[in-house]
Amino acid sequence: MKRLLLSVWMLGVLAACGTAPTKEQEGAAVEDRKPTVGVPDAPKPKPKPDPGIATKPLVEKPVAVNPLTDPKSILSRRSVYFDYDSNLVKDEFKPMITAHAKYLQQNRSAKMRVEGNADERGSREYNLALGQRRADAVKQMMTLLGAAPDQVETVSFGEEKPRALGHDEAAWAENRRADMVYQGE
Image (cartoon, rainbow, N blue to C red):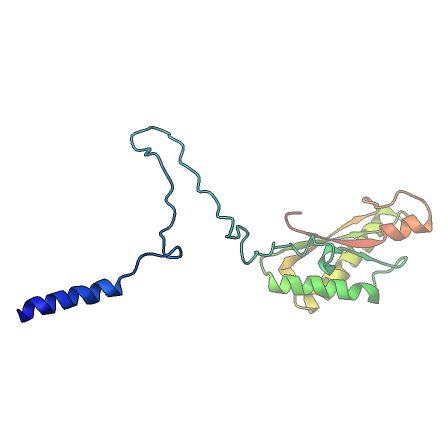
């Protein structure tokens, strides 16, 4: 009899602990899906986005920008201009050359060609030699600032590759330059 009373009492306690489900405790909605087993190339149902869940990623990955082509970067500037009959690097171009030297120092697989140019005045031979001295001046500065000598090649085009086609001081000033060209460009 004690066992019977104990069993009834236990059932009463258990019944009192259980409650009817409330609205908050109701189960999640179930999608009605048709089976696609055995049906070749049957389109799979696409899940419907929950309007309460954001579909945009929480953290956006930054787009990698090449500093050599980014117009905001000093590395996108590539020309060093010289005075008439001179291969002396002007102070205004030293920060740009320094930035390129540091880039080469940090990227040992990168290689560059410095192309020396001259204006049309002077003989062809003289302008080739002047263009080479200009390219060598830029290379020497870069190697002193940390670029490896084998990363920088020099060549002279003399007066053969003018940037400006004119016969006045403005055109000549554009043509007295050394251009830095990275391998692969």
